[in-house]
Image (tube, rainbow, N blue to C red; front, side, top):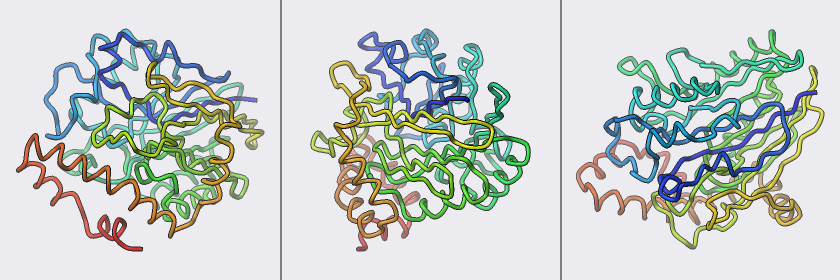
Length: 348
């Protein structure tokens, strides 16, 4: 039997350095053989911002970064919407430190799928990750970057990997931020990944927990929430945001060669004084977990939650950016927002 911990977003805000906190030294993880997380922010040596609106809160000093006890994690995905904040060079700065510490990284590079592969006790795993397309996507002009969201290609990759590995795990950076109901389209696609042979689909990015389900003997956790994260330092934060976003999950999954033997969703609550996720008894949020599990696939509730939480946050973030650089902000929003985004927010 092999036990693996999965957590969501691990983000090194500069307040950690200001207060002399090593979050990796303080965090408590369940017993496991391997720990996997999403490394959210890029910590550059001395790089210019790749995008004008990269927040100065979203990094610590490179020297301080190298001192942290990062190696409580075995591997980090870099396939997320911040991985290009300081361009390819910035991402390579992070990769160099991870390599020095013997920590694997995946989801970023020049291949179509930059995979994580490992074997423990004779049980082999292949993990692939991706981020939905946006301004950080790879192109002919920028061939190195995060693994991207091409569903047909991902399904083909899963089928191929399943021929040579006991378990294929999909670790996607997807979903709608601050919305605790998964995008109904993601529900369909996650299930198609399981149908293709994935043992588990374990998501992150929304900064709030979304539901967990068993489908066709596969485990799907749509979002584990933020893990090491300081929400009050993010762009667009408002103090009256949904307090449930302060909960997160470390998903501890036990495997044998053929299947998942068991899983436990360990609950954590963000402590604002210590800036850390602290373990809490599952009973404290059991009713909430039941509610969000029951909401999987509910399209009307999904759209309602977008209007309730996401629109407010984006308006605040817009004015923060506009105050700093009006022209660049307008240009950014006109280039980035599509009709589909407006329909998602405005239509019932």
